Length: 74
Image (cartoon, rainbow, N blue to C red; front, side, top):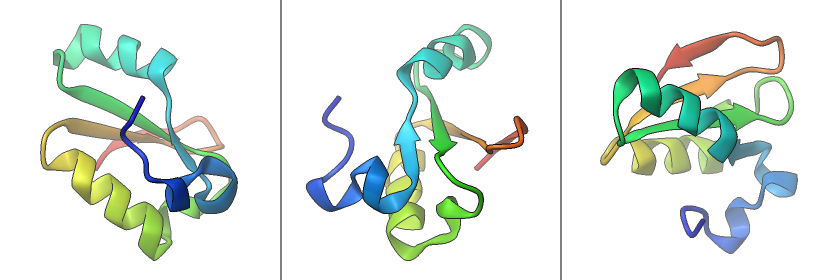
């Protein structure tokens, strides 16, 4: 959807902006909500993933969905 750069591909970084889950969060939190899903545990802690999430939080309410099914606001 144009939110990620080439070096931020999910297979490289381990996180993806999940548009399906984003729609669910938008019902509860409004149109600016985004859901970032970890592809593997701890992926959001890498420098590249952290930078992506920080960039998204500048314009959105961002929720992180972890592989164990938990969600938290970033």
